[in-house]
Image 1 (cartoon, rainbow, N blue to C red):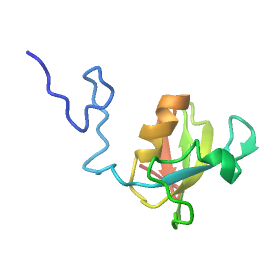
Image 2: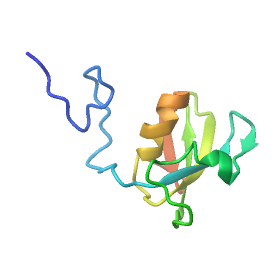
Image 3: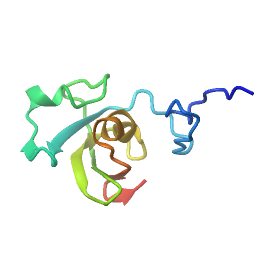
Length: 108
């Protein structure tokens, strides 16, 4: 029996990446600090580390940090949604293996 791919079945292998009922489309975010790279990201470089729909000048009031499974912080940035897993799903996990995100100091 073939399993239907759903919004919470994101890994393509049938595993569940269930982050609740959050709609991820349209969530803007940008990486400010690449901790594993040891750099503060300037605007020119950060275009490579932002959501596809990011628009320069858009208010992104919520601070986030992404961590690996040992609790080491890899990236810090800003987002427009205080309950979205978009930075983790779109960048942190596929690019560095991050497994958790804190937004405004709260673990999601």
